[in-house]
Length: 376
Image 1: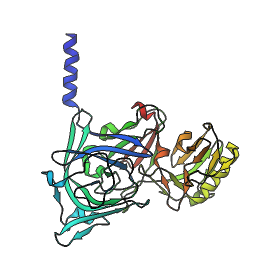
Image 2: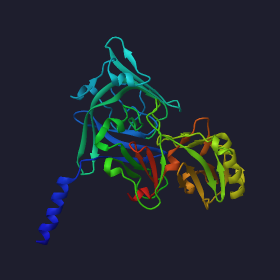
Image 3: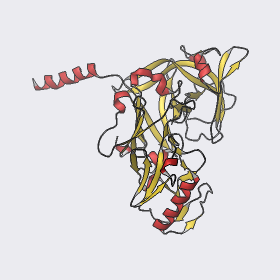
Image 4: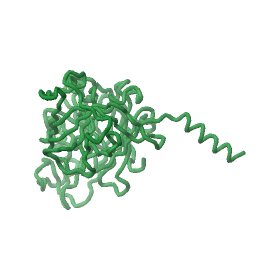
């Protein structure tokens, strides 16, 4: 009777469980790579999980210019479900950089990234396959993606391309549709973790974020550029609060995007100057040059720097960071600040490490919960 009860509950539970998609995320040198498959039969692919872009693209044969990748290249001729799409299609018109192949009247795409990386190729549809919470698979037919055959730039982690998780119509999140109720979450493992380097990208009900330490901030999305905008109000170091603007009325709503595909965090110049001065006073360490001449604020330290409190203040959400979220060891005796400046602000993935980050596109919120991502 007892054995039958346990057997029965597992059987009944499996019948009621939803087949919700999930993907494994792997940490590699400041990039976070997610796994999926494309085509029929399904060919494994690896893409940078990128909330700062929309289109899904993977390198394809024949390739006139490609970077090295770990997995075999996707060959569209071998997929029975692969189809290029015409220039007149809505999906083609949605892509801002789309052009038309005059000979075949098919859609072409071009993606350009801030670091100089690029991808070009055909816009097509095919079946995309993800893992699932029931240990099976979720296959999504007719997913719009880029079959890229001329690509280049900084791709060094063995990835096959990029998976856009932005708010636009051709992102993976949008194409999964109502099945995920506008919800997804991820937990980015620290590259320095001695434990496993993998975590999960969850969708739908499995992406709910709750529990002690949870904070939530409003999000604005579905703008023409498809970014997820948040409102940054300032940063605190210890008891000192550094405001984005000395006049609270001048704080612009949606003044920073959250981006899993960018490593560093970019903030306004005036805020960075305040942050530098506050760090100098708190750390009382000698300033040194970055050995690679990439980061501007570095300190001489042969040991890990301990910190009492470093808080990023979003509207309605105070996110308390650990030193690894904003300090990076560059050599045996130098540690550098990973917050830099630009006229376009980005909350990067180092600042998001070891937080369960949940997006709700229906409620228009982003939530942060401190989490040891290596234990999920």
